[in-house]
Amino acid sequence: MKRLFIIFIGLVFIINLEIKPINAEISNSQNSRSELAINSFHIGDYFNMGKLSNVFGMLKVPARMDSNSSSSRREITLFFNDTNIAAYKNDFLYMIFIQTDKDIKNNILSTPRGIHVGSSLNEVLSMYGEKKIEDGNLFYFYPNRGSISFSIKENKVISIMILGMDHAGDD
Image (cartoon, rainbow, N blue to C red; front, side, top):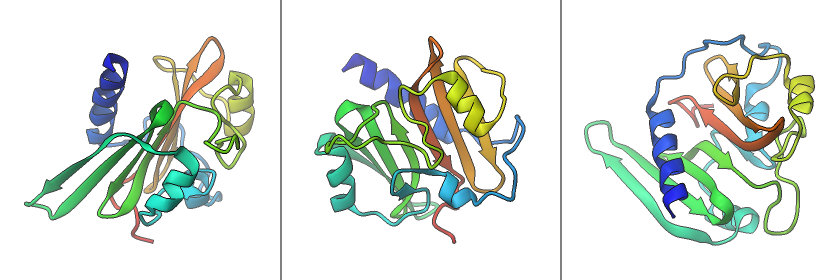
């Protein structure tokens, strides 16, 4: 429980940061919406609890809901088994965080380029391009859409986080 709390606090901190392209950006010729995904979950998708439950299983803890009356924004963060997290703003997906390689039906959870928890560092670099690891993470930015980061430990992916820009769902 303490580990989940620490991860949650870290995610809250990361989510509240303004994302700036500090590293090389991924080519604009790629469709960033399709790149910012895990399996059938894309940044900007409309909320669908049935679809989430079919992939991630039952909620592990109650959902966290925040409303900001000054901006009329509603945020919902859902915590599933194995520390898979999905977060929504105004009913649109803006963050996915996974620490497992398979869903509840034993299907691989991966990015559109086939990277999943357990992939090697070389596989990530081969599929996304050469990057310098910063504090155990590789960051890839999609201008005006979001980012994908891979946490690396002992040359293996241990988690994947996909984060949309503040206007997720505006397509």
